[in-house]
Amino acid sequence: MSAEVTSVRVHMRHIRQARLCAHGARTWWKHNGLSWSDFLSNGIDSEVLLKTGDPRAATVVKMAREEQDVE
Image 1 (cartoon, rainbow, N blue to C red):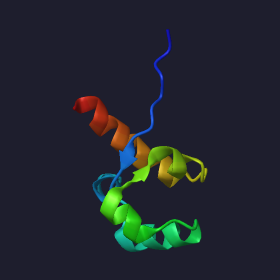
Image 2: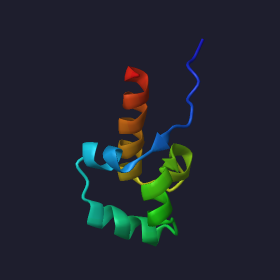
Image 3: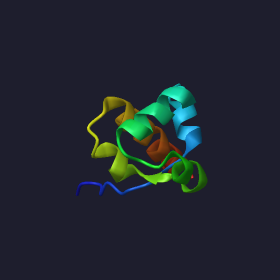
Image 4: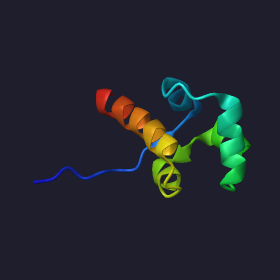
């Protein structure tokens, strides 16, 4: 039986855990048409980030999933 991959909320702490800079992340958000202020307030669904196909997004999602697995 395979484990189902579920969506998680990604927050700023996950960007920091991935050792990415906030300024670069903000620029990346804008480039991808995402709301930075909404992200800071509410986080973002991991699937939205993964759909960009960016490997940095996948790294940040990995951080969020690892955190969820620990809880």
